[in-house]
Amino acid sequence: MPCIEIDGLRLNMKRVGSGPALVLLHGFTGDATTWDDLAVRLASRFEVVAFDIIGHGESDSPPSVSRYQMARCVDDLVSALRAIGHIDATWLGYSMGARTALQVAIHQPDAVNALILEGGSAGLSDPEERATRTSMDEALANQIERDGIEAFIDFWETIPLWNTQSVLPDMTLNLLRRQRLSNNEIGLANSLRGMGTGAQEPLHDRLDELDVPMLMITGALDKKFTAIAQDIVRQVRLAMHRSVLDCGHAVHLENPHAFEAAVCDFLEQIYPH
Image 1: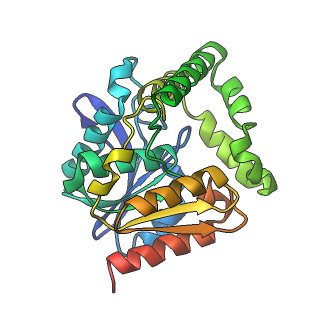
Image 2: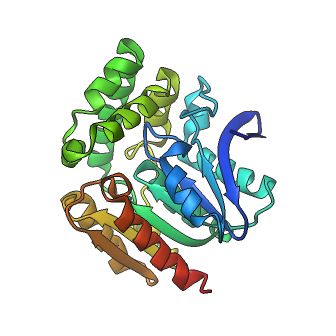
Image 3: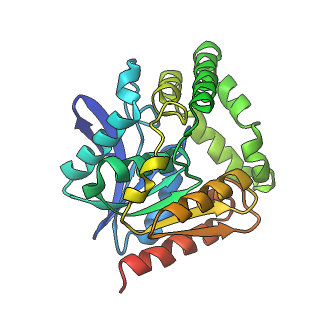
């Protein structure tokens, strides 16, 4: 996997295809391989650039939490995109990656021409809720460092957010586990501390600044993030929402065909043949 150095930080990425740039951002504990099948499907029309976000995959996992702060992550990703020859891109993100893509759109709007957010949010607007979440993420980060990556992944795979994945084939679940285990303790712990939902700047009061086409994708069984998506769509002029039946948080994993169809339909509106 090629890498690029941005201000001393090595970011790994997978690049395939040619055309307008499409940036893909994975979720917490993921990496660029999350998007392998989708990248192949879209490579005929786009240069697909899937990053390993800082602290994940083969990208660097520096010891300083400051490098993981969401604002720094946004700047690094945009710098990397421009270093490979693209001024702007359509940004697609899942969960943590969706939160990151939304931050890019607010803080570096010239780098974004459209957004696709799967299971995304604008953060937490209530200060007490943010403080509680930050405290919980710090405890989780300490757990990762104390118990190691395998023990953490054993725990992570049991959280209720993934209950709908119990029906997935064993091969799919085994591949997902192997990918999660390829991460390291420092990277995941500092990712929670620097760019977790509680640590990031909430964006609810700035959503009306968005002036690019935007697609929110959620699984219909993921009630929490479906409600979040509907709320965001009400605030963003060019936003739309696609709900996928019988899916939870990770639509791209639980129903990849429906996810791909939603993405391709949206991209066809932005880049018609």
